[in-house]
Amino acid sequence: MTGSPESPTGGVYVERALEASIRIGLVALLILWSFQIVRPFIIPIIWGTIIAVAAYPGYQWLQGVMGGRRKLSAILFTLFMLLVVIAPTLMLSGTLVETVRLLAQDLTEHGTLTIPPPPETIKSWPLIGVELDSFWSLASENIQAALKQIGPQIRQVGKWLLATAAGAGFGILQFIFAIIIAGVLMPCAASGDRIAHAIVARLAGAERADLVELAEKTIRSVASGILGVALIQSLLAGLGFMVAGVPAAGFWALLCLLLGVAQIGIILVLVPVIIYLFNTADTVTAVAFLVWSIPVGLIDNILKPILLARGVKTPMVIIFMGAIGGFLASGIIGLFVGAVVLALSYELFMLWLNPVQTQLSSGGDGAGSGPVNPSG
Image (cartoon, rainbow, N blue to C red; front, side, top):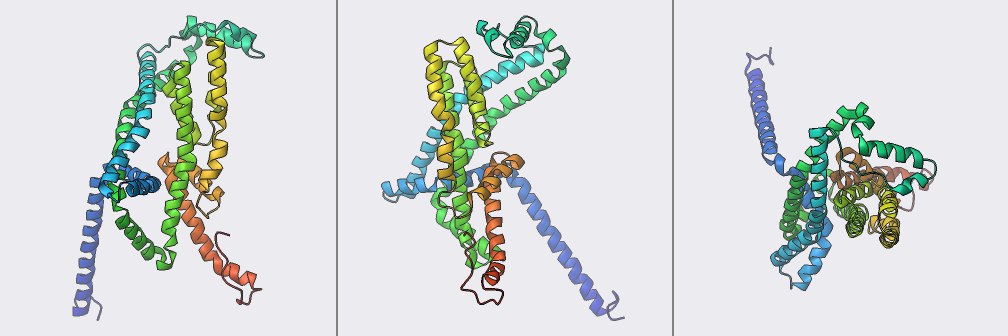
């Protein structure tokens, strides 16, 4: 038989298949090995790339002011980002870590909490005032009796809080590293742009080079429209918490950041704090915090529609869905990845649908006036 292993032709086939298998195995091993080496740096590199893309217009402006000095501009811009972003974060995280540490220590070591007596004005609250005052008083006197049935769950929460406090410092260091990576990448923007266009040309064709620009604009719109607005709100709210003397100001500011990113709204934090201040602080402090909280809580309704759709032809609802879906699936980094992936998928789908739209617009004879703009 011509194709049998004993024949010359069969032997060549076996030799070629064996050689191909060895090469494929070596390439797979090399890829796996490389992935294991760079795995600790993947998240900081992704974050650094996102920060570099989002902040590149500001870097370009600084480079123009510095007379085109790329490296010096990158160093100054990196120091500026560290000062503006990390300094407030460290100020708020300091109180957050200390609060979480003390709370977790009470929960894990004693299985209890030290709760102050309730304010006298709570009894006058409608509907829930009497019951809330009774439970609060019992918890302040003997919390073991009030929380006896959920003691094991409280200890589990304490362990989780300890893990959160331990990871807070690592997260801050990782973000600092990402900002430094962004400072290294920004002077190399031209090379990165060529690589991105080469990848898109290999995957979608040279005529779809606009997908690179779409990805850049999507990252910038999400950074400013969702993460930027949430960061501004949380920093302003945290500043109000600290000035008003609210306990655990860093924790509530971080909660505001998470609620703002998740598009739930920081009103869920501001309203209880306002009620707390009106019952524990002096009238001037409570009223001042109320006046401060109104614009802080509503500023996202003004900034978000403006920033989220700025410079992007893709419908805002697509970017918004991608950002929120990515956040639910992969955390904060999913905000950007999800928005970019869904925006690119939408554009590719409209490109695939474009011939059908053209045919329909021409009555089915293919003699239409031209392709329909996918972005409307």
